[in-house]
Length: 245
Image (cartoon, rainbow, N blue to C red; front, side, top):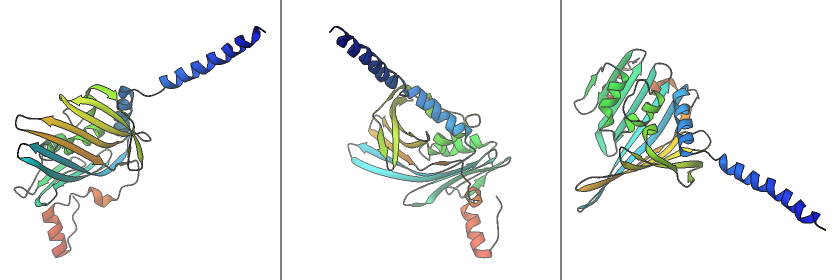
């Protein structure tokens, strides 16, 4: 008669142990960020298209600015980033590299420059792009692109898992340069799908939401890595000329 409780006890102990082990295997915020960083730094090709939407909140009301962007990279030497401001036909900014040559184009001033490094070229675009010129390139090429990266967040913790379109995502809630930030990271491939952040100023508040559609380690159409400054486009259209940078 006394053996029945003992059997129940012996069965219950392994079940409790399995439940505890499953919980322990859930990745921490730090582990997710480390896996994300490794994915970007080790991928051989990368492309994305995305949008940074900034909402300005003040006593005078609410305004919004939308900045589409696109990135393409083939290691070790080919790279191109471009952004513009929606509704502004004179806002296009390009940062490009092929082999040892780096060039930039900005519609403001309508001139192409040759900075000394890709890092310098992207630094010139970082502020006016709302940071999108820096965020992903700093993960792809951490030795070339300086400044704070997403891996430099503090007080990182797991948020609730979220769905971004068809993609199940971890969310990491943290502080970035003292401001709250939420990073949505694809649970399947550890690529960034969305970043939400908020900054408080004396007279206004900004809310940024950046979305990404990233692809790694797939064949890239070579045309995505052409410089394609606006003056080149117009000349090629007018005279049928081909450009190779």
